[in-house]
Image 1 (spheres, helix red, strand yellow):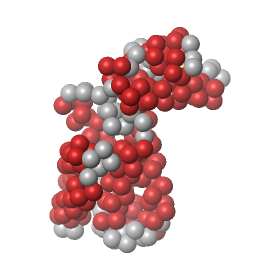
Image 2 (cartoon, helix red, strand yellow):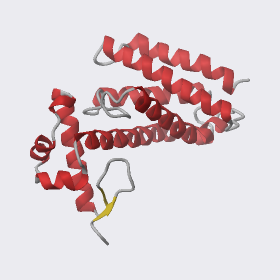
Image 3 (cartoon, rainbow, N blue to C red):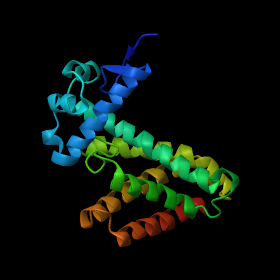
Image 4 (cartoon, rainbow, N blue to C red):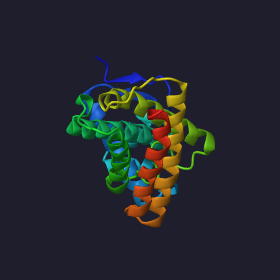
Length: 218
């Protein structure tokens, strides 16, 4: 098997296949995340990332054409980690078997996982699910992607919690609106307090429950 395969798009030059390349790829993204945390996007450079990751600069360029490609890959990794964390929390509730009880607990899981990552994951404050300062169009695209993947993840737990779910256009729109609203409010919470202002996090949950009740409890 080849060590690397050509990327099908999304800014990567290559996608790692074998374990050694995957580990190097992860080290590069870890280094990029730590630099973003310390100095912001302006301090991010392929040379600094290579030095921090302990790899030749050619290894960085083997995967990425520039620093924006690194930031975009970090955003994609963050989304995968976020959804994996939501899944773990749902599994702990036994949500697919009705363990969540009220569907509102599922909303708490979605918010709590975001808050946990914002507090602990390097670079997440600047690159959550979209690259830094991407502009409204890219931000909208990222939030639509988050909404789509969350909806797919929560369909079964919602049904187990007693919600008669129809994956229709209204539900898809509701998830997009919910993600957009939560994104704005949680950003406000972390501007107010580096650990997230508790009152604003709580109000985010209140708002989402109230809004989604109109869709999930018609």
